[in-house]
Length: 486
Image 1 (tube, one colour):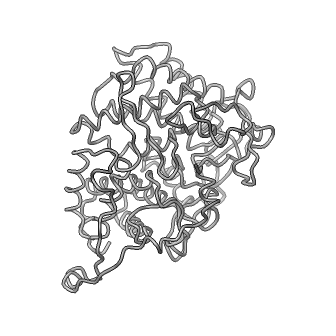
Image 2 (cartoon, rainbow, N blue to C red):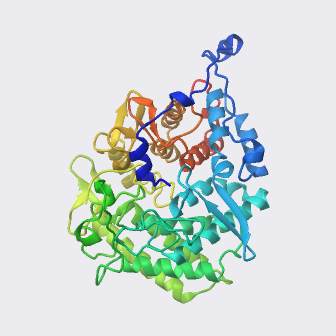
Image 3 (cartoon, helix red, strand yellow):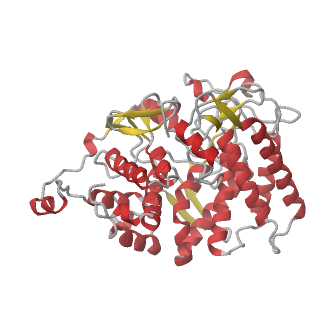
């Protein structure tokens, strides 16, 4: 069993050399496309070994591949888009309800964040595929169980009796919990998935008693971590040499001044925050609190008290954001901060993991043409972001999690999805093709000067998100995919 951090530490940077696809030059095809062609053999598991197959997703793969002129891009799309379904899902019926356990890839644990992000790109297809819809409902049901087990945990096991290798962390560990790092987004993502599924299908049956109990616990946890009157019940310490795995001052982090914002002890990268108010995650919380208000205002779900609690909390976070989350950059003017503490201090950077400043429009937290967002985007996609790298292998955002000089394909994908500039989108897709290093898949990160030095050869979130980008492009900018030289 390896956690993300331990996986990187133990294996280091993986070489793609052993995984390279043998290239062959076909003279006739080379003349047509003006570049050597490779023998692009599918990297998907054999049909009998796939965890789940969706007719609607398979049909979409066939349809969209026909729109793609570049054969390597078509190959990557076919390998990556179904990767979550092919390799990571465990679907069954438990107590008469669908239940879906989703691992992140090379780690046998289910993150609330990753499981949502991995399944999200398939939502547009659930109306065409009832079986796929049941799979998604199973994820929603499983996430509710996880939240009810412990709303402060970020990752869980399928078996709630299993004891974690991190059992000695100084926090309230329970069986069934893989890791107990408090991250705001861990509770936001399940709301996003449930709301998105309902919007696609109109099905309200998933909003049952257990799900409502989980949502009440979400609101309670958010309130606790506003730390209005005390530090709340959560703290975390770990004996480790990794500075970003530990939390200072008895596991509560550096002081914050109560202002309505919610403390996130860890980032979506599972790295500890420097200042507790992580702004992208607070903006995500504002968005999903609106979803809860919408759901519990439905006639069949009506709960005036719950709506009032969500509304009050949302307004408090919005006020805190307005007063503390917008800063004056000495060069760029007003931008959105990455982290603040309520005392006037702020941390200027962006991380590749989502929520990030770059990804905010993707999450619905801000409009892509918003002036404040565009100004912030300029900063995070420049040398003014300490974790923005530009090298021989490409450019993009990384983060402390994988070390200096590493770029995450996820950041390049989100840059393209949130862009309205065709040239920028084309550039991003072209860069992503190169980063696969002949493996046929996306990775967690790659060295800015060498794509063959990468981490995590099986990272389903990055793979499926890449597929989502290509689906998105096929709908909004189909002309980009027709360029064989992309």
